[in-house]
Image (cartoon, rainbow, N blue to C red; front, side, top):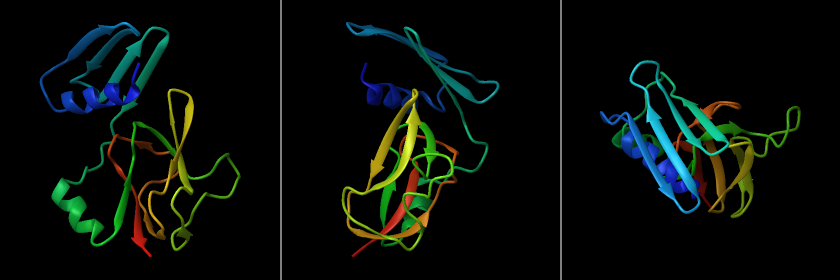
Length: 150
């Protein structure tokens, strides 16, 4: 299953009155259920279940995100998962605010479906702001870092 397709479907049904979507491909069957009560979504596939709890914090609008980003390059989460600043507990973080990073350098890890996904910088620059706390759940497209191009 293409997990990007799954995450796109999740994003599309958020905030709608659609409570459940189910489809089948040659690779398996997917059922995505959105609960109206407690804010969480469940994605299930054969032998796999992902439960995502939405943060109760204010999610900035597109306009607010652009205003906050200023002239910085924004690194966004390519998937839903848990954000980790370091490769393991007790290890130093991949980057700190003020660090100079190069294209391809690992900035963080996002754990999704028990898989550790390294998120790399797609630009040379200086880390101006780290927007997510270690261990915090992140959503698809959520801003993670502001990088000032150098």
